[in-house]
Image 1 (tube, helix red, strand yellow):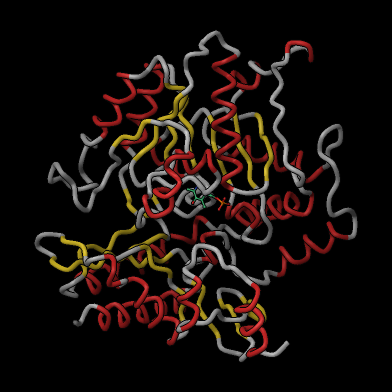
Image 2: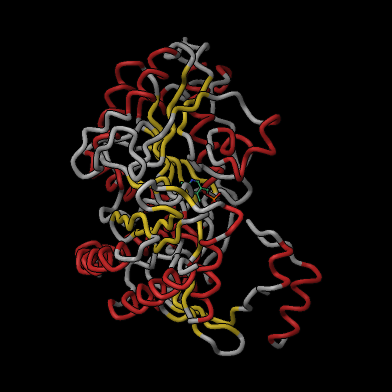
Length: 449
Ligand SMILES: *Cc1c(COP(=O)(O)O)cnc(C)c1O
């Protein structure tokens, strides 16, 4: 199929994710032919810097020789088999390694095939744990405003982004929502680098008040990504850990986006020195090659399900592709690459480059903040900088930056008035610089009038 036919048939038959399909009338989808490192290459040979890691999944670039080889080797053995009653080395090795690498003593690994499913698993595990531990009144979940935990009904219920959930409100679970940290518009007038997170008190009060009926608090550690890369300090997580212990509530950490090095450490919770009771991982876990997710639990939760079959305490959750061997083999190789190629040790140089651009972005009159955590950065455009007034969402400033950057060969994605960078961890410094220059130019033009 040539370029034009691919686009034409796409428009006749394909329904794209997270898109107003009508937008494609003016900005047709770009048919990708192949990938090469941090570049996507379309059917006309045009190259795009993948500045968002293809929606936060890619870690080491596209068409990666080691990951390709791993996948091919596993295909020649077996691509998939049932995971109940059977097991395989890649899953076992992955579970063993993740247990050792993740914070705390999360010794048990449950497999699923996407992030939303990992969140559903964590919610159900927490819920069932309390049912089987003599605390059957603990049936509610607490989450933060503007949180994002996925699109399935349970995951959406603990989400807080109106854009994705408002229309579904009547079909969602009843949950409690606390106002989350918003450091750019801090109501206390503090700065995230030096504060003690007094904003935690809203979550604290809510959990204390409802402690008897709350099963778990679910949170995105350090960065509320879909909310517009809202970055907040580790002290918030330390306070949460204490609160959850005191109130006997599970702490569910959703590191689906921030896990695997994005924040500068392998897992975001490391920066707070705390461990969750349940940990959800996905996205980067296979280097962005195949769908896979895991939910990790500690021994105490695991043991609450461990009994004779007749006790009916088992966790009877499954997905058809649970523990897919291709995906698990890739995930093991991802961990090998982290080690062999000293990926985390090389991040600070790139993070420094992001820092150097902070001043250049913030010199633009309509840029309210350039914020960074690890190799994730975000530019928030505002109508009035002194009042931090957002542009009206109908103006779609972020989307305009996205379109301008595409014309210049860079893929950025908007989140309202925020444009962000979440490049593959191995992006070469000159390419990262090119990406930042392109974004700077696009933001300048889009905010000029
Ligand atoms: C992407 C994401 C999810 C959902 O993962 P999917 O694989 O898209 O279902 C959940 N939580 C967070 C924090 C995410 O970024």
